[in-house]
Length: 510
Image 1 (cartoon, rainbow, N blue to C red):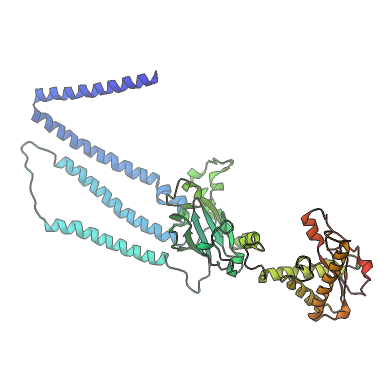
Image 2 (image 1 turned 120 degrees about the horizontal axis):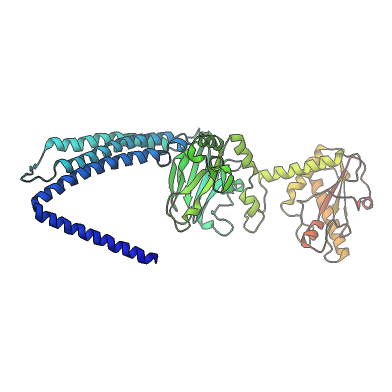
């Protein structure tokens, strides 16, 4: 029924238009074609002037009304140190173009009215006018010169790279369909080398694991940045053209596959300070659509987006991040786990399995010394047995693995520092195989560890060793994890005389 009504309305509208045309034809016949044409021309000129006034008022009013959102005023003022320069350039350019916009439209519509058709009027033919040529080429050229020079000066200031003496943080943003992968440096403050030929299922950025600077690099999505600190962003892409865009910071740079770019900026306000500014504006004094218990200004975040139409999932590249004080940033960074250590270390993809990094050596040394000193502090010796968790052997043999030397060197250093401490090395196996063979293997393994300590400078009189085979399990041998836990070497430490091996058989292990 509604469709029929719409069709009838359209038909009536066409009929009205047709009748108006017929009325105009009759008026021409009654009044004369020349009189009607002159009257219509005059009214058209008046209508154009009225339209000009209304159009300029609406254009100016709407620009002023939406200036915060469209032009970056009010709550959308720049949050970076360089952004004020960009906003100033935009304001100057806007002022110049607005003046030209107003003048050209006034002249356009006024001339349409002033030089409307008149009966008997004759147009004046002007073939050339040097004054007019100079005016409409010279003035724009002068104005453009000032704008271009100002733009070049701002470009050189904003797009300059960091200096050798600058205090800055370098991070990396890699765009791909459809997300950003952010990479932050670890304790060394350096980003490791990459090679696109190394990209695979376990190495999404193609990091070169033989470059030790990659060992502490951190991969994150939502992230934090320190306020007042210069940030240098490496910008890359894996597949198609993307664009690294931080609207609140006036940062925008293409991410081009195979052509790394960069942008340097300094955040000048924290997220908390920015939210406090937003709270002063009416448009943010509304409930958040995603959290009705909070106002919009309380949940607003700085945005990372892609400013290129990079595919059907382009919208999903939006990320949020926080700007915080430097101490809070350092605390957040310390909580992150390096991708290499959590996903690559000691796997088949790790080319550095035969070595430990300085941070790993230090961490294991601190762990060992803490456990050893704690054991010696207790008045009784019943809990003085430590598991040498990083001392391992080749399968089925008494040959130490390459990485075992690090913890054994820690044990040597500890015993050299505590010359009054004696030690018993205890070897254990799981229940796989013949019990007698396991006992013999555990005894040989304990002896090998004792020999290593002696070669490291520890007096043989302070050391003894014994094997216990599969007789003292600490976990369930029915599982692989349990069997691995039972295959262990223990270090019993005491400031007194070493007990007989049998008396330490069932001593709890740490």
